Image (cartoon, rainbow, N blue to C red; front, top):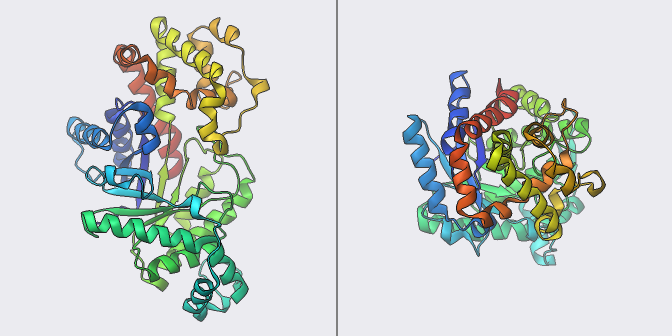
Length: 414
């Protein structure tokens, strides 16, 4: 099983928007871009929403049937570790192996020396096609790579072998995720991470490094766009080189996590993958949930009341809800509207504030991030929220499809 050149990951907190998400994929396919859908949901989200990986697989299958979709699709065991992988084994065919918390754990001297020896053929100047300058590979550099990443790679191997033992090596897409850590990987570090993964027998197909800058949830990229563009292009060059140099799967490509609404860097990503004729996987998280809330607000009546209540309760439980996402949020609390102010808004005011349209004066990225982490409030509403999603189905589905197609897919590929 090899992942297609272009793939797009969509999250769906409440499992209602699979058909609308798939419609966006089908529309970009009609424009000549073979993008395949990957439905993703993490163990944390399953725990909060009280769903299971089987629910995601069922939603995907039902959407495929309802929409008459005939292409391949994937169900992602999103950000799994050894403690959580088993519950995803049956339902998933894409596994995002997350070992970020193992990064930076120093290895012992013997293993470090072995790592240096195993990759010593690259000592000296290393020229990677597509990158103007050569890299100086030293024993000291390799030792630092071992200290920062060897334990993480060993954990990847343990999890990967476990999945293989349950599903078979040819029946899933393995992704390695390193993005949720404190240190960004340089292009040269990425090469040696890939080299070690190959050496230990992990046939990685997508890899999610941490880039510089902040990939905050549901809002635009925060950081130096020019620096990101340079890093990203070099990382693409590294993956292309690694396929040939290391005999990794031809499908190997970069995966950009929290790609939701990263409009500032989409042009750089598009330029790089076109330059190298490379693939890309983009994983969004929470944008569909936000489109649901926008749709409820636009619907007025009970929908608007629910949207306002989600904000009010999210503010009342701010620390509880933002805490788990602290490293991927950038909220200025001083720029958040008061609950009293929001309670006085009409549908248009609420929608304008939440919709990610930077040309709109009313848009508030801080407000958007609070709603983003507030889906637990909707869970606690139970049937009331579920009924509202059915009542305002038409406007919500329109929003979901428009968001994925026009704000994401067309910017990346068209």
